[in-house]
Every structure is written in C-alpha cells, then in structure tokens.
Image (cartoon, rainbow, N blue to C red; front, side, top):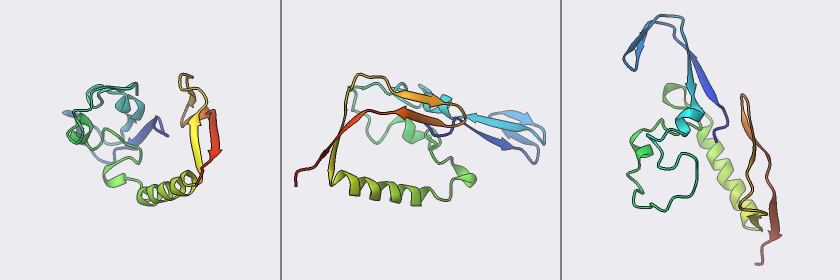
Amino acid sequence: MPAVNNITRYSTDTCEVAGYKWDKGQYFAINVIGLHLNENYWEDPDLETSNDTTDTDDTKMAKNKFSYTIFCGGLRICPGRKLAMIELLSLMTLVYEKYDFELSDMNEKLNVKSAAITSCQELKVIIKPRKL
C-alpha cells in the first residue's frame, strides 16, 4: 500500500495530459492507490501470491517507471528518496542480524487505515533473539 493515497498538482499554464487539453489553473489528482492496484501494470494487484515467476526483469511494471510511485516521480521526485532507502536498509540490517521475525498468524487480515495517509494499525509478530 502506498503511504499517500493521492498526489495533487496545479497547472501553471495550459497543457495536454493523455490527449486532453487543460486550461491554466487546473488541479490534478493522481490516484496512487488506483495506480498501484491497476491490472495493466501488476500481475497480481491485490498482492495475493502468484505462482507465475516467468516474468522477472521484463514485468509490466518495469515497462512504466511511474507504475510504482512510493517517492512520486519526474521533476518532483522526493529529494530524500535515496537517503530514505539507505536508512531503511541500514535499519533492516541492524535489526535482522539480531532478531528473527514471523507473523503470529499468516492468514489474519491486515488492519490498515487509509485516509490521507495509509498506515497499518496493528501487526502481530513474534520476535525471537537470533541464535548466533
């Protein structure tokens, strides 16, 4: 799930988007959740497990770089995206080298709340110290 449900933009000049002409001063909203759940870009948009692993590098998503927009894209891409990814990998390395994690119930539905921002309200996991 994306952290932000939609991204808005304001046109400062007349423009053409997807073959439609738009006047100056129009607001645009990009439905990020709709994009992330679009079957045109994702083999399994509902995130269910898929047995088809034949498409690795040549997936539909790879053909459109804006089909997965966790940091937006284009000229307005998040300037902190590389730092965020480095921090995330560093944190994961520090935590996963010391602990093992597993979901307490693999079949339990996630408790996700979605408004302006999507967040997981509760995730039950079992944490055990890793045996070195």
